[in-house]
Image (cartoon, rainbow, N blue to C red):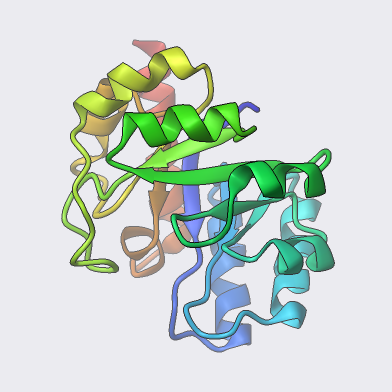
Length: 204
């Protein structure tokens, strides 16, 4: 798959209407992908609404952790973490859909994920994260080492506009962001600012 740009992940602690408004603003800023993540029980109605919004903008919509919900809501794919099931077992159920896998700080895990059919892999936390303060830290050198895998590489964890250029220089294709996007005073402008980083990086 082609994946380059801002990989937006939905924030917690918003009611459905507030979440949909926030996501609409992010879509106005031309994000590359949206992942739906809820620590509390994910909601089918909410997921379907987000899927429709993303489809209208031709933005891929991914559900975190829950393959059944991804299939039921019409998502473009699912993202699996360490405890969310075997990617190789999930792959046959995702025909024509995207499979992303969290690989934390492990190149071996990324190799195994790609062998199992992952369309992209994610490394992180690349910086200390307010969302997951206890997360293992992934060295930036990992992105250069993983280029040979031939799939897009996603960075996650503590990413801001200020530290994002370091990740692009290290070889990340996409930046997964929650707080620095959805807690910004202007979500649309913050998303556009991330997009400019990628255009500038490509121009170089």
